[in-house]
Image (cartoon, rainbow, N blue to C red):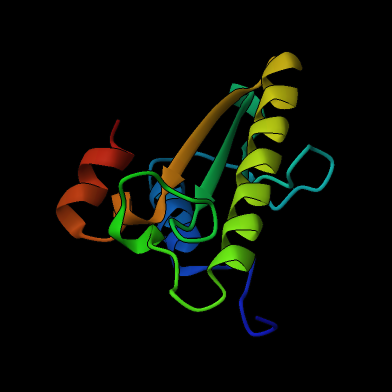
Length: 119
């Protein structure tokens, strides 16, 4: 677990490169906001979270399948993450931010990536 990174992940970098190529300027991992968003677009009052399917419990996703060992521990961990995410998103929306969540599986393949990021 100590080897798992929370910043500078491949999906985050893909999204950031896309945004930069389209002329957007942003802040990364800004801890002034609830949940330390991956990307903050101040000019557009928009926050983007790039979530890993496993760690954030993406529904109906193959990558979010829980391991068979220590099942109860993993369930609690993932449910805590989901609850924390929902709480942080609610706080941000209450403060007037637009919140976008991009899932890891949505940008894994090039075809899906183009569709999702051009949305």
